[in-house]
Image (cartoon, rainbow, N blue to C red):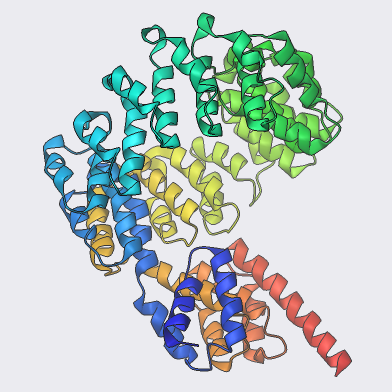
Length: 592
């Protein structure tokens, strides 16, 4: 096997994707690497020299702080030889450019690099010159054609109707679909015949767009033509036509939907609700308003909990017209799934409506006394949407290290107990994103050092939420932090903000190998002393597959980490790994 292929697998192992790491590790094990052609030490050196993931991570953060990012370095990053870096820089440029003066962007519309032109068009949005957008429709580069189609959608009335009609005759189905979408936004300015003809297009996507476009036609909607699709052999077409007709109260379409909701198979019921919750253009809550409310309330009690959760989304679409009294009654229902679904509906409603104006707080407070932790967590989420002060004494009774929702409510009242638990949950694998969201609601009271420390997490989603939280709570810091990240993106030089992430990603990569190599054992042993909780956690996970080769001194360290003072995830990993090592050692001794 070539050295180049092994280097490729090393890069895959050093990935943010757990699936890519798993596949790369399996391929390397089959090749007897590392330890065959390449020493493990050389393998680690390869990863240390590859700063691509960190450059991409810096781009992800810069996209959230785009108002503070200068344009010119991004154009330099677009010239990088690394394809992943160029792609990351392109999207930063698109986001930053949307906040930049147009005069700084316009000259780059003639850049010889098609990706630069693509990013600039995204940045300009509806301010892009129509002529340039139309020219890009015929560009040989797929990216330019996609951005042109996207902008045509956004520009709407700025695009000449004559051009849209011409696009309907295009051989390119994507272009025909875009024309149909835009024509659907023009209302009475166009003849419905154009859209009705598109219902017969040979491409499914064009026909779907025609149905959705006709949904916007209000009282002009050609219901007779749409009814012919209620029994269409194409399920997507049939579903979309049914939804559009149900949104205007068509009895036949509503009857079909009720039939979906009564399907014997729970997956069929869930999928039906997923389709119904997918919005039809501007129709909003129209379908929910036409469905019998007793059908939806019945589904909140469905034994298959996803059905209840999706039904809660449908009920939330009713807004102020939601069945408030019935939802409150379900909070004391003996079926736990009914109470959970009702709480979910209230949380979704609360995200849009101040709950205090429609329901009393006491029934939700009572749910805090439920024995089920998930129920208490959901109740705390709902309480967050009341614009009245939640009695902190009631909350403190239920405060524990894992309920970030209750901790967030307590933290919002200025109590350090809540803030401490939120900060502790930043150092967990499964609760960090919820903790970040709660800290982001504290404004300038959010602990900045803790958020900055969480910025180098290996979890892309959490890192993005941390960047958002810093933008919302401590914007004064961002001009000081941006240059470091721009430097990382443009040159690969990693500064203090993201430096720890490199150690974490190497630990992740090595943990995926599941190899008892002595050098790897020694590396993990040292990593257990790391000051970064994620490095310790991944080292522990890596050791779990190494029995009976683990050193006695390493096992003693694992036993100490069973009480790690910083991270619950480290403690949990140590507990599981010690159990695994003991079991495998006992098994080996038995068969030995």
